[in-house]
Length: 189
Image 1: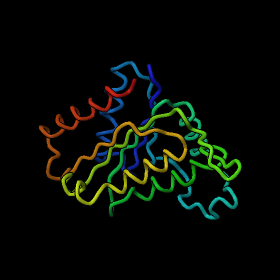
Image 2 (image 1 turned 135 degrees about the horizontal axis):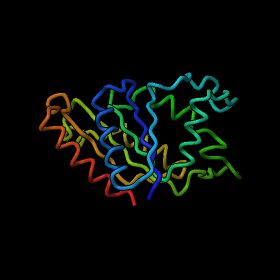
Image 3 (image 1 turned 180 degrees about the vertical axis):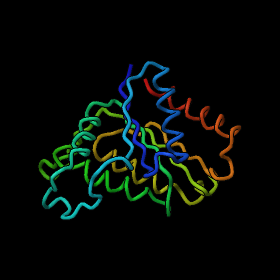
């Protein structure tokens, strides 16, 4: 049994991304994993890292709890839409405010030390554009998130992009998405 943290990076918990997160949680629990979930839209925190890392802002209670959940988890699964070829602002603010020096990494002798080493991640993102378009232009949203996580020691085991979601979301299409999520759930070992 693994400990899995599902992080919904869409501000609306009634979104298609929330459906994906719900399906993940259900599937993970059926496979006897221990699961927690963070809905970023439900958290109360300032997105803006006001002074960079020069002066660490005091963390709001929701962000302190999120750090505890991250430390608890073996796997982090991020679910979010791609907006303007990037992650949503709420997810970017969450990363900036939570993955802090002393928590996620620290510098020793000018070299970064990865404080979250041993954890794994999966990235699930959605787009109104086709998946084939990202084959040609690249998925900068997932690549940037994966790089940020790797800097902290978190190894990404899978990136799944669902394209043309507005055109494909129907009852028949939902089964397609659930089957694709099952492939990710099978990787949690």
